[in-house]
Every structure is written in structure tokens, then in C-alpha cells.
Length: 425
Image (cartoon, helix red, strand yellow):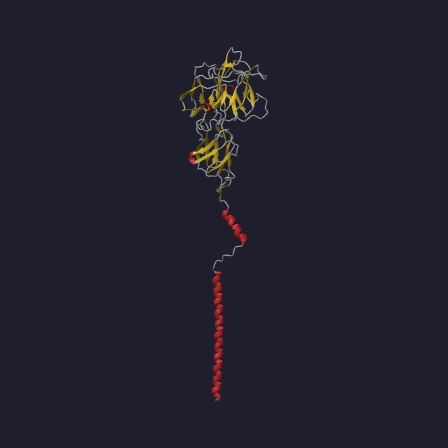
């Protein structure tokens, strides 16, 4: 019996020892596995958790513009839209753009401010870039241009305005820097003289001109877009003071290249110059871009032996201060059946004032000497006659005494000053 009890005790001891060894083996295996897993994890690249501040910094860096070396001097230029940073101005006047030539960088957003300072509606179009912007008088419109290098024509698409010279050139060049807004100057344009400068100071003295005011005086009035009169006669080798009022809505200029005269005429102001010239014919014109091409040109006739400044041609206003603004009639006093003529130019009528007898048939001849189509309308008399370029139309007027407005009904032409007055008496 004792032997059997002893045997059972030995079995229990062996079983406990074996269980203890098994438990120790399990612990060792678990420890080894944990160490192996830790070693395995150390071979894996860890992605740290990003803080909110780091995330914001990363987003800002991702959205920052990519910079590339500039074309000149290595100045960095951004590839991101720069409409706010690159801006130029184009001013629409009657009938021209200022400046006529504009340069901007290629492949860059450039904001063009198109400001209409004229009395007529205008437009800014670039056909090759699909640009067409209408601009009412006094308004400013913006257009963003991003174009490849090249030359592009911009113009006003209002009928007759392009033909009258309202055209310019946009040069888009690699590496070019746009001129500051408003800083561009039309090619060939002259700087405006300082306000308040003494009359006559704007032009260099003409041959033999005296500093004192000359004893003879003539008026040449600048209007939109013409001079009145278009022909003036003065005596040779004599000091003649020329009074130059600007009665138009646009800035103008009075230039005679052969005599070295170049005078800017701000709106509403009057300038003076003294002319003393040898006998001959001289062209005077407005050098504001587009105005000469639109017909703002005249002829100064300097003759030997003349003692007074006389009217240059029949139908022109007398070249004296008192007569310069006198009513101009076609060919002087008209017989009741004699035809009269009103010429359409770009953009004005000649004459602007016409007198005919009342209650009498009067044939009015209407030649169009402009490059654009025009029209002759008198609403109160039910008259509306279209006139193609180079053509001549006629209309018979028989009206009661009174004053009537005639004008061109082509859009924008009346607003640009293509208006006249018919006096029936």
C-alpha cells in the first residue's frame, strides 16, 4: 500500500514539473515573438501623425506659385495669374485711342482698363483674341488679356470709327514688362505744356516773329474733329497773332511742321502763337493720333502784299477774331433756286451752319468725302438721307422760317459732333 501511495506522489511531482517547464517554455516563446515583432516593426518606415499647424503649412506650400527665372536679370516672375499686378490703361477719345501703341508681356494675365473720355460711345475690339468691349461715355471697362507673342490690332467697332483712325497696335513680347497704367504715350505725341504757361510760349518763334503781340490777328478754332476755318490767308513777312481756342470736347493740337509750330490745346482753353513766314502754302493739322486722318487739317496761305488777314476761300469764315465764329453759308448769300452743299467728312459736316430762304425750294447737295458711311437727317422736316463713301446725294428743302438741327444718324456720329444748324429765314 505504501508503495502505491509513494508511486502516486512521484507521478504528481513529475506532472507538476512538466507543467512548470511547459509554462516556462510558453513564456520564452512569447518573449521571443514579441522581440521579433519589435525588430520587424523597426524595419518599416513610420509616417508620423501631422499636427494642424504642420498641415496648414503644407497646404500653403502646395498652393504657392512656382517661380521661374525672369527673362532679364534673373528676376523671378510668377506663373500664377497676375491680373492685379500687371495693369495698363487705354483711353478712348473722339475719335482715337491713347496710346495707339501698347506693349505687354506674353503669356501673362494683363488687366486692360478701357476708359471712355469721349462724348460718343466707343468699343475696344481685338478680333484675333476674341475681345469686344462696349464702353459708354464716361465709363470704364476692364478686360484681361493673356496672349502669345505677336502683334494684334485693336480698334473701335462703332461704324465709321475705325475708318476715321480709331485703331491701335498691341505688341505682345516675350519678357516684356507692361508700362504702368496711364504711363504710355502715343508715338509721336507731344507733351502737354504746363497749365498756366504764358500764351504763345508753347511754340517756338516762327521765322522773324517778334516777342510782342502782332498787330494783325486771326482765329483758328479747334472743334471735334475739324478746324474752322480750314483755310486762312495772312500777309508774308509780317507778325500775325493766331488765336487758337479749343471749342471741342476733346484735347487737340495745332501744328505746322515747316514753321516749327506744335501747340497742345486743352479742352476749353485758348492758346496763341505769332507767325511771321515767307510767302507760300503751309499745312496746319492736329497731331493727336487719328485727328489728322479724320480730316482735322487746314491750309495757311501766306501771300506777298496782303495787308490784312483775309478769308482764304469762298464759304470759309473770315480769319479775324470777330468773324471767325460768324455763321458760315455755303457759297455766301444764296439765290432762291441756287443749290447749296453740305459735305460729310469723318466726323463732321462742312459747313456746320447753313442759311437758306424760307418757303422756297432749295436743292441741298450732300457729297460724302469721308472714308465712312454717313447720313443727313433733319427730324423736324422728315429728312433722312444715307450717303455712301464717295457718293453724292441730293435733297430738296422747302421749310418755314426757323432753326433746324441737321445731323448724321450713324451710331456715335452725332455724339462725336457730326451736327449742324440750318437757319431758314
